[in-house]
Image (cartoon, rainbow, N blue to C red; front, side, top):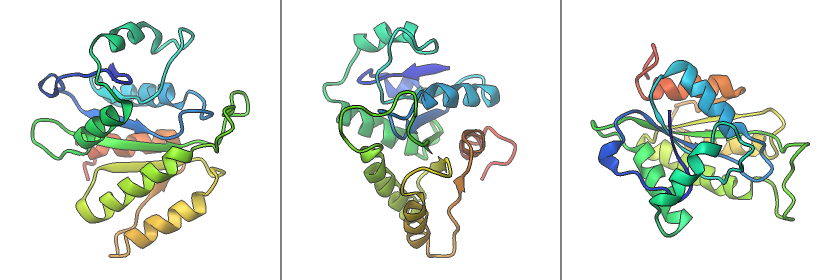
Length: 192
């Protein structure tokens, strides 16, 4: 497993294994990204994970990679995210990728404390990439906990975007979400 953390730039030619962009709530969402990486690692021995959030020395999976991330950086995080979202969505022969949206309920132990609404950026990102998926065969997989705020509206919007008869599945567990993402990149037994 190789992690690409905020603003860290890895040359496209160096990404020789499947690339997963982990999208979803950062502030107040708990450390779901670590759990997601460990779930991918159970299924694929070598992969890249792009994780757009900051880590502290207490985070066991990420702490030793933080210094590496500071060495080679792009200037703005938005530019960095768009670069890797496009790469994860690429259908090129050079690499396979997938955008994983995981929508956990807000953490009771570590909720968002900056006064902003929980998952506020995630809603817009999911709307954008959901529409991309409906019209351009984007590689995204969405999973959510049942009580994620606004889930019924997200589900309805995706249904309307996919009105051409293709059902869009929102997976109920992180494990099932990762399993589907692995299949999308063609590593799993049932490539879609």
